[in-house]
Image (cartoon, rainbow, N blue to C red; front, side, top):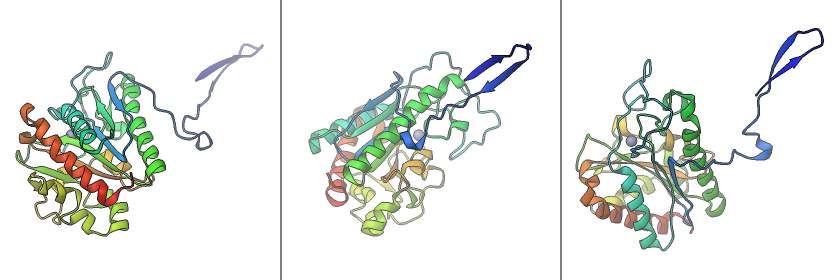
Length: 276
Ligand SMILES: [Zn+2]
């Protein structure tokens, strides 16, 4: 906010006042509704996120160029993860059917070429006009994580993505266990790398997974982005896993079957590790 103070002598002083949006005494900023972000309040300690599946333009915002930005793993990339917006919605429906309650959901309707919600702001967008939409996604996700921690003591955030490296496989991204360290501190390493870990359960439910033996190092460029690193096992008090689905799981005709396998895994995981 900028105020101009004009003195009698005619001198003009510009005074900049910074408005504290995240004053600790008042709590974190309240998410602002945005028509380019799908949000669903939940009743389970399970949060779904899908930042890369959107198809819509962001009015008044030009596509990002990525000039001077790093590329690769956690750098600049503007391509969409096809059908992941639809897949996240299908997973939500399947979880509700299996567990009787809705999970939380935050999904991008906006195309990644305008905003990448799985990156820090300096890589996520290039036009100030994109900031409110980026903030709407991230503030909502943060608010849901805080609510889940408060109401359930722990929770699971699943960040839904698509990859083109292994068509028939779901790739795990936890920064080699860092984003699920709350889980492993409570239940031991088997909760991350054993047959009853989330990816162990996915395999039992018929998904080919990577790392196949659950213990090897994760796929270097797909091992967990900014969302799971930000919300997983830190101050937000939930564990977070990035799910990178190969194309075979995201074909239109396969979405329902994929969602049912994920939902069955979520149910088993919740029975083992979460308080409902
Ligand atoms: Zn992605």
